[in-house]
Every structure is written in C-alpha cells, then in structure tokens.
Length: 298
Image (cartoon, rainbow, N blue to C red; front, side, top):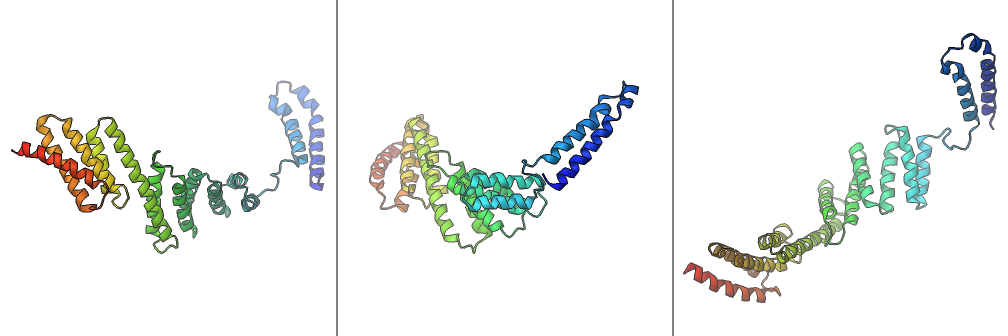
C-alpha cells in the first residue's frame, strides 16, 4: 500500500469517527432522511476501499498508455487483444491526441485478423472522422482491399464484390499515381469476371425455370456491363437460345419479333467473336430461325 493510500485511509477513518460521534444528532432527529443518517458512513467506507484497491489496473491510466498497450499487442500479432486495448482509448473520448492513431490501428488490427467486414467499417469511419489525415490514402486502400478479400465465390451473393469494385475504382480515381494502380487494375478485372459468371449462372436459373425473357435479358447484361470478361460469347449464345425459346412459348403474333431478337444477338456473336467455340451451334440455330422468319415475312 502506498503512502498516499495510507494517508487516505487515515483521513477516511477520521471521517468515520466524526460520523460515529453524531449519535446525538440521530437521537434528536429520528425522522431524518436515511441518506442523511447513513450517507457519510457509506461514502467513507467506499473511499476507504477505493484507496486500498490496487488490482483494477485503471488507476492513473491515460489514452496514451492504452494506445501503447494496443500497439504492443499489434506488433506481437495478437490482433484481437490489440482491438480490446485500443477500444479502451475511446473511453477517454475521440477528441484527444491518441484517438486518430487508435482508430487507424484498430482498423488495421481487424484487417490483419481477417475480419474484413469490420476492418472496412473501421477504415471508413477513420476517413469520415479524420478527412485531412495524411493516412487517408492508406485507409482508402485497405478499405477497398477489405471488400476485395471479403468477396466470395461467384455462385454466392456478390454484394461485397460489387462494393470492392466500387471502392477500388474510387481509390485509383482519387490517387491515380498510386503504386498499387497496376495491381488494382488486375483485381478489378478479376472481380468483374466473377460478376459476369454470376450473371451467367443467374440466367441459367431463369432458363431452367421457364423464364426465357428474364434469361435472355440477363445473358445480354454480361456484354453490356462486363464486355471484356471471358464468358461474353457464352452469354450471347445463351441469349440467342433464350430468345428462340421465348418465341416458342409466345402466341403466334409475338413470335416474329422475338425470333428477330435472336438474330440480332447472333449477329453480335458472329461479329465480336468469329472464333468462338459457340459459333457453330449458333449458326445451326440461326439457320432454323431464318426459315421460320421467312414464313412470317411471307
């Protein structure tokens, strides 16, 4: 126990003795409020124990000490513990000198711990709270990379993939001279490939469910939205077939216009991908469609 603690105990005991000597007041004022009669005693005992307490670990703590402890855990690779220590920095508020450092390092801790949704949120918060901080470029990069690393396989929900593309583009637009420009370009291509495959998979589901118009329109989105990806020719071939099936399922007076849509898609496939492996089958379908259209036109 420190000298300061011994002094506080002595002082609190004196207060206790003074309260004990006030029996005459309690006898003369039996109707006095309970707080007035026992409050000083309770406060004295509370102060007595708080003066002795040395195991809480928070006595004399500052945001700087909390931050340094979090940084130590981060450097040791103990990222979950680093987050817990850094969160204690914010118990002192967000306007002191260590708040911005703690916010950035906490976001990095989540990232290194592969909790990418949390890291994206915390980097986004850093950018919002400290818009003029010199680390904003790094924060924007790690925010985009968080969504990139959160992106799932193409057959799953692609919300995070779309966000990753948006934030990667936003980053290279804001920082065109970044050293990450080439790598980010490759990552955008990779993510767009995934989004194109997702559209093809969705179109097939529509096709199997007999929703041929929805299938055709979804196939066509691959060319319109992701023209440089690998499944474009496959998607055009799928759209052509879907329009033919859509025509077959339509009333007679609607069949002609829908068969012509199939011809339009075939022409795109032929012009854009003359060496496509799907072209031979597409030509056979086109030949049959052409015969049917002659009957309508005649």
